Image 1 (cartoon, one colour):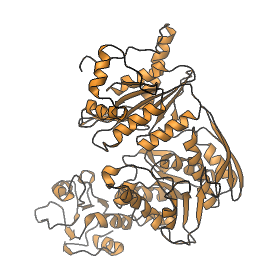
Image 2 (cartoon, rainbow, N blue to C red):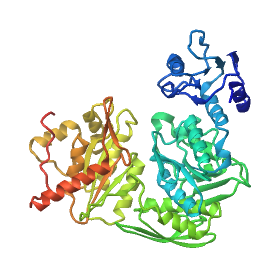
Image 3 (cartoon, helix red, strand yellow):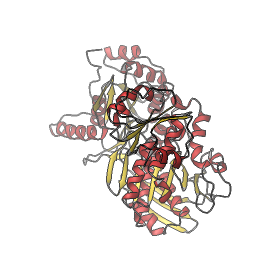
Image 4 (cartoon, rainbow, N blue to C red):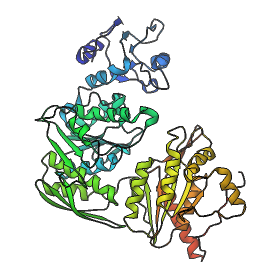
Length: 534
């Protein structure tokens, strides 16, 4: 495709054009490090960096044309044949990318899921259902991008950037994909990454405090999420699927065209189109009887806890919205027995439960611990940290929720980045009215007093140690909950990113503790000490 054709196709109106616009474009990029020969380089302005500063790198890598929003000189470049100046490069990027890849999303059914919690598990369930209907299904989620079937790529962001979205969807279409399930995060919607995705179904799970470091206020966060529903305008083709237990439901239903059909789901509100007649929760499975406008479904799932009842209902509601056969809905949902790092059960045949979960907001942690409590364990032992360089306001809240809802809490590190892990832990301790000084003072006598509610609190800044301690304390009937990272496989300290996977750490700890038990050592009371270095 030539640059002239691309500008024409995308209906981008430049401020000025210099050079040869008949130059052939073989790719499009806004990250200079990814440019290859024949690419069009779009100079986007980000929160931390400005693409205009990287023109020479893009040029060295073979860019043949540039789209910019500032006057730059291409006279001295090696291969740049054309310069297009536009008002705002960020806003034209999605349009240029979609036109270059020939709008792949127009030829597939696209299900967009927005909300604070439950997006990932829901994506897996809906993908399972579409596959049970015999349709090739792609998925773009926090955990991974599935291009077709089990072909999986790791995913760096919940919503891939505007170029990658179109690129992945074009690959999917080429592979014969008929449906795509996509998490539409508030970041992705606010930054316009989804602007040129042709959604057919909009799903709203729930809305609570998150990402205020990015959006500023809860209103802006809600407005970002609402962009998905604003596109539901064609009653023939579009559908809205909404959780009416959430107080924000009317706001989402009101977006877009009121004539577009809505399918509602809820656990509490029995007026919802899709709701449970009864459900049973246990430490090993979830059984639910679901009422729908087309009949009653009996579902048995390996996904644990009350919050997964909601996730199952979302998938059923989407099935009802698209007219899926009831048996396909049930089969698709039942085939998903685990979602990476989402209430994921770690089973080394131990006598107590171990769950790894991504809960990293106050609301998600609270819901997680409530749903674990409903499974009736003897004790809950929780490991939790807060990441560095983000929403400091939630740190004391996280510690308070963990200590209120768990018999034993271990506070630890979770991607401290450039902050001192002990400063983050100090912020967290404020949630129970302690300071780091208080904690260290107790440590001198090797006795950490119980909290006023009788629960115990320990801390260790090395996450591996905290996980091992929690697993070592586990006894028959307990549930150890390791929260905050879920599927992530790294720990960021300073500018170092090292491999670290909570699930692997739990497996190793279980094997290690098993060896100690076989040697007759009781690990339920370990000596608690901060390392000498502090």
